[in-house]
Image: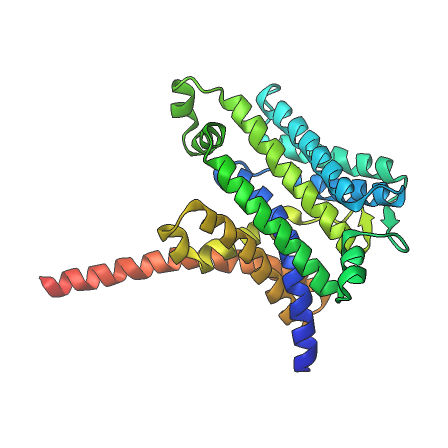
Length: 309
């Protein structure tokens, strides 16, 4: 096992983790804040990547392509939200329907299943050429800039009246409705914002990996959940004692940790075909940690109580 190869893989993993971490922030909005398991993300991630790739090949500025990709994600989230709130289709089924539809839409957008970005300028290549840095460093800087900026915007937004209503809707929908808030509108806004962030992440990843593909969003929901659970588990101490922005930062860092685990395990000889199994194991372990801690604490309390008697 070569230490230098592991270091190189870890460097790339951190850069990837930051870019995918934006997707994790989007999944967090629905999974934790709105309390909705939105399956649209698999399709909206690829939608962002496909849209960004085809726009760049047509000569559109890479940053403008990212912003347009974000808008397409908003539309995808709107479609899911309307099916759920207006047509009363179950949230999971609505997400699956959108995800299935987006597969065909993404092929329509690109005209094929894959669009390479060879020979065209992306944000990564422009930064590499301007500062004479490696692709991993360029991806790291861009991911860090976007990640910190979006965390700041989300922290501000969640502190506004609308943002607070969205958070309250996920926490206790009936109470919020009794206070006169239109919870359907809150769900629509939340799902739109979530999928917009996911599509934005897909656009960044497409520029980083050098192509857009209809299958690039496969497993996005599982990767997002794994990153969220890892971030919450590892940084639980800080999440309970500091402001909401620390929680958002821990979600971003959870994505980095997930990518680091994947990179190290691959360097140790695990086959890439086993990554989905590894992801499932990581999620199970991360979910089991709080339960095991709770059981251990209860046993300690019981032992102390018996000794006290």
